[in-house]
Amino acid sequence: MQNLILHLDLIGTFVFALSGAMLGVRHRLDLFGVLVLAFATASAGGILRDLLIGATPPAALHDWRYPAIWISAGLIAFAWSPWIERLHQPVRVFDALGLAVFAVAGTDKALGAGIGPLMAPCLGMLSGIGGGMLRDVLLARVPLVLHAELYAIAALAGASVVAIGSVLQLPPVPVTVAGAALCFFLRLAALRYGWHLPKALQAPPGDDAA
Image (tube, rainbow, N blue to C red):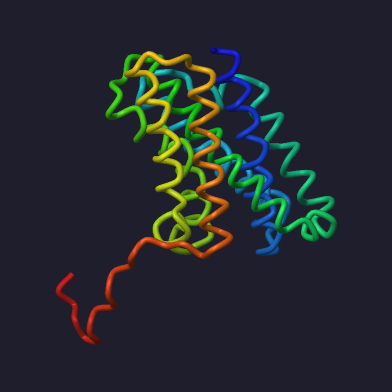
């Protein structure tokens, strides 16, 4: 099971790093900026999760495979961005895959660290959305996960499947795969059909109560 979690984490690191790096290219950042976005998108959620569960130092900061992966993804995006840009739809699919694998891997890791089944899915969701939130903050925009296309809800749904499977003592590998599949396809369906949660009504002009 530990090997499965590690491989899911590494896969998620690459696809999220590629997604973040491509966004940096679209915003015409230099190579350093592209690599910073690749690192932030791929690693922020996992680092925060590891700190919260006491897994220090975080894997993304002491295992050489993580920086090797996000640096490679950043360089690929920077050097071959015109070719990758033509693969816009596949990149969105990879982003959904990264969300799914980070959500379930984060939940499995939290459960393994002794976190309860109610809090573990929240940490799994944080693993999936934390990098994207930091990426958007660095680009000075409202994080996508807060207003669009069931991003956080899809991550929480997949993570919850893993936690429920743990409570019911079901085989961990099929449950993890099922949780990842639910998150992945829910996110793709939200992209395909434009699903959103209801949004707050706009405040009247001049209303500064907040």
